Amino acid sequence: MNNEEELKQAVLASSQKWIEAFNKGDTDTCVAGYQVDAVINAKPMGTFTGTDEIDAFWRPFMTSGAGELKYSEVKLEVIDASTVLLSASWTMNVGRGIITKEKWVLQKGGNWLLAEDDFEVQENF
Image (cartoon, rainbow, N blue to C red; front, side, top):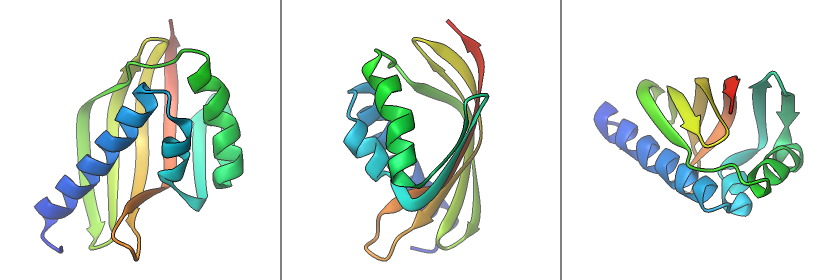
């Protein structure tokens, strides 16, 4: 799979799977969508490194009732055959903001996982 459009479609499918898990409140699947050494830069909340910290960030947020996550204005940039960057605007029932960079990396088993997740909350509802 080295065609740019195929890479973009694969990342979009992985991103959609993550969003669906988020909207179901499935923290385990969301955390499993990150590499073990992934980093979240969540403005203004802070930086979270590794799946333990990522779990500790997402779990209370998701169990508090956050949901209805939607991405818009999605842009994809293929860096190479195993790295694609995604940026977008996002909204959910508790706020809105922007994703400045989701770095998706193709794993040896064929799955795409997040290595970096940089986003900003611009408004809380």
